[in-house]
Length: 297
Length: 297
Image 1 (tube, chains in turn orange, green):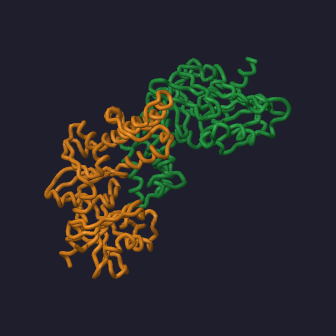
Image 2 (cartoon, chains in turn cyan, orange):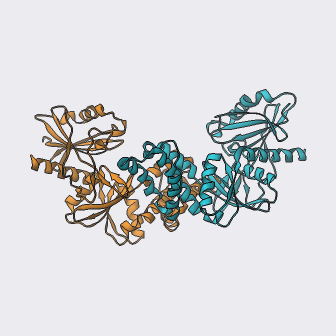
Image 3 (cartoon, chains in turn orange, brown):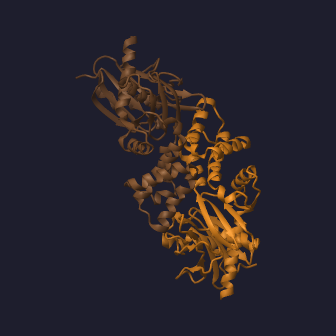
């Protein structure tokens, strides 16, 4: 089988590509050539390096989402302002590419007030809506920068971003807590920390140092410290995101581990949340964008 | 004039030494040989490298505070448990040193529940009390790990540590916000962010990403972003530390810039706070420890 288009998820730190036939994945490849390390003229070589084997015959459509469309990306794909459909009204074509490629970039979404922005997650939301027509509710996309989005009548109405994932990474890897936080899990400690943090979310900075002190004074295990760190940060996020999830139907889109933590945390608040696989939603969203492109030709 | 003792403030990332005659500073020196980069046998060479010129005649007393007394330090000086006087009951002598040195380490303080610990700040509190006899109130020591301590009857009664300073450094230097935060100040933005954060401290992770979005969408200046980041973090800390400062007399010990931010923030809450210079308090505390050592001989 031969690929009839190529799907690309191009974030800050990773580049991932799939050889597609309709919605079927024929092959996939990835590299660490994320937007963050590429100058403008390095995008095409980075992509070709990954997909060259898939380029037989005539020019092939490449549909890409993520930071590739940022100002520092390959081509700037200006944000669409919410409320707006996550299915893009237009894609932004990269000019002057290798003749074997026709590269299109999906624009991100922005919200003027409170100021907020996303690039990549809109495609996951679009993929989710492609699979769940007329779905109304809240989509939460846990990750480095977790997004909460109100979805209604096939539009993203409003959204809010939390730096929870990036704070977890920085605190566990680069702060004094790196000496006290290790691998492993502890569900009881997670639940306990989540509850503490939801009831007094302002105490975050003090609780964090408490993880260090619990190690120094009482030899708390590194797995427990990791679970508590996660519980404190997700608890503070849930306390602030309450208007998003309270009394709502929540769909979680993310990697199974992290999305599972959010699902468990929401369940404790009496909110049922279903987890959907991130790559699957990304591919469904890119496929919808590609289909609209073909329709217009 | 000849030094009759040497004062040392030995933290995780810096080593500082003063040649002293009584409470008079004759000379000072510093290096980046903090505890964090030294193996156990590297402490003596690091110190000698800095103070060798001051070693004339017989053996000289060296009195050191800070992480030098941690388990990974030169000699472990076990914590004293609060409530306790910040003037140490005993100092811990390093054995087997160069015969020109007699090195004594000040122990830190610990609190069993909630678990907390300090090394170095206890000496600043002791210095402050040496200068202000019978002072009762709250001492706040802004820094990488800001400490709030209840002081009464010449004892530290309880204390709490906030990782505010380390979070500021990580977020402004290592997170996505490094692109949006720069040098400079903006007092109005600081005050505004402080108020926002004190009234809804749980929203921290969302406000943080807002700094990025305000840059992307509205071109917010890097100085304003820095002031707001500081205001958000200090505001969340003040919200959580309310039992420490509400209706209290507060003494701030720290570097003038950061302590000044705390003083301004507390003044907005109607709490007058006086700022005391960190090094001066450290030296007064080490001098008191040295004097008690001489008394005992």
